[in-house]
Length: 115
Image (cartoon, rainbow, N blue to C red; front, side, top):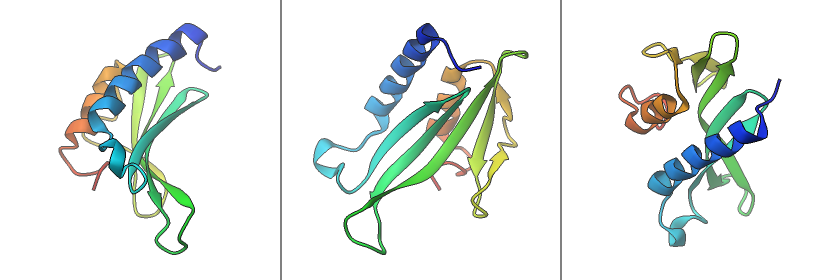
């Protein structure tokens, strides 16, 4: 089941604050930017960059993902390894609040999200 409209608005407010802190200056955003998408019960954060193979198209590079498990009221945390698959984030596989997930991604203590 997808998030309610109230939940979506609350999450977007949290994510907009994160983007305000994390996005590069406006004059660099055609070279690198950060975005997010909410889909179903999941949220994905990604970088947007020009393709290095073919000039012109922009590509999305996944950074982090979290999925809300409503029955347990937890957010499962994932990072993408070199095999291009999402793996549970070992240091903190679950958090209680979306803000905790954002904090993990920003701090990136183990360099799993931003490299």
